[in-house]
Image (tube, rainbow, N blue to C red; front, side, top):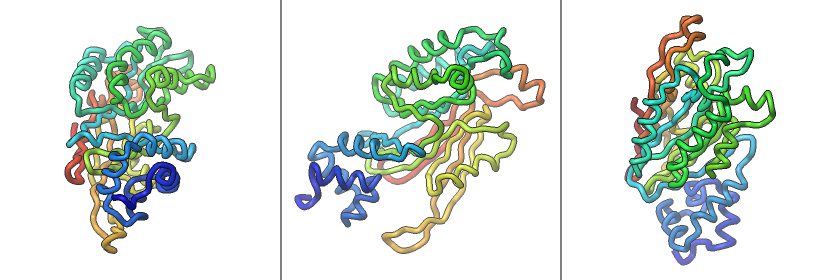
Length: 303
């Protein structure tokens, strides 16, 4: 432990090696040893900050530290559509209440939190129950308890909020994220989760298209290969594909099977007129639960 880098040397190495796993391999020490060293000298926040600043803007990397937990339950919340006549407010608030009272859980904001119907959009502006400003402020107030406890991993917009961005050049979800002090993702990001003594990699984006094919979920790995879980929203469907991929273990110099999930995050919206007109199936309401173990490497996705 005495020979491991400290202070400025450690931060310079953190800039070069984006994860503890990569840095531990460079230093030829177990990752748990490196992690304990970083915590012991009080450098975890500084290391995470340096990595966040040096992440490429074209694909941001967000580090989330839950090393104090034996298990993290991650809930990707999206397609809430606050302001729509068919927004299921009772269900949405019950899920939020549940999550707020679970100290071993966090949320990832997957977009389309606001319906924001405007003239010419599929949603009917005359059926809206809230103005975009009212919906934005309601969302901010609803999420504040989770934000205060640093349990919102990020917020991203969806195509509904993009209507506002295209119209006025300002994103309402960016406003909410900045007011709550949580990371804002413009389109997509890679998330590195440290849970207990384990590390997980997740790629998340809002998504596009009508989502009629399960195979569309798998296309995310063409963008960022090697993730443990790929999450998309947008389709209002609860879908999940569990597969194995072959990955090279550079320490043991062998190829091994690795579990991968492709997950679509559901919604909190009822059956809208445009969905009925196009013959879309009614999506199941709610969100998936992603379990990340902190004691041994294991992921599980359920609805």
